[in-house]
Amino acid sequence: MKEPGITAQMLVKNEEYWIWYSVRSILPFANKVMIFDTGSTDETSKIIGSIHSAKLTVDEKGDATRQGLVQLRNEMKQRTTTDWILLVDGDEVWPRESLKKLGDALKGAPRKTWGIVVRTRNCVGDVWHYQPEAAGRYELLGRKGHLSIRAYRNLPGFKWQGEYPNEAFCDTDGKPINGQDEHLRFIDTAYWHLTHLHRSTRTDHVIDRRSKKKLEIGIKAKPNELPEVFFSKHPSNVHSPFKASSFIEKVGAAIATPLRRVKRRMLE
Image (cartoon, rainbow, N blue to C red; front, side, top):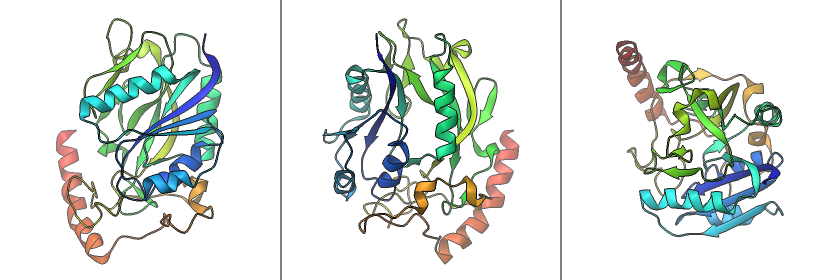
């Protein structure tokens, strides 16, 4: 029998821009936070080390292959003693209200619920703007958009299978739970996903797939939507979350956005 509670699990590598905000946002919510660093060469490790909490454990794992990352996820699961797992990437930051809604859902979830689906706010340009729902291609529970299973029940015999980043959490028959609607529940809440912004000084000088910087004009967020941790006092080696796009990036976004909208309408 697993103990009540939630363990946040994080696989990170070169996430110095956002890792402090990510960890700090979930610390009040999670009972435990387990981080595996897979070979960061920027300030990620130092920034994590500056966060002092009895909830936090950090392992330096070194570089891992795509299959190796899935093996690390299974190692994390094996070491987890709580009945729920919260997957968090180093570029994902949660607002307090979103975590409250998620926590309420976990407390009231029937035993047949194996995973909780939430929305993501995929930021473009800066933390104040995010992609429209039409840009999301994930399909879960009859919905299509920016969706993700982020909370998983820690069930015996279940494990991660496949190859990163397309791995799946599978039941004892090896069947992915993301196709089993009767075992999933949707909660209409969202976290901030910074995957399309610069994430590290190791890649932010290059506009390519490694940096994942996306040039697009997004939907303007309301001030009270942003994660509260963005407004917290942060250490001197942590970047401000409010860095605006450069002039060149804004021009590129103005050109790219109409083309992206046309492409999305065609796909629909």
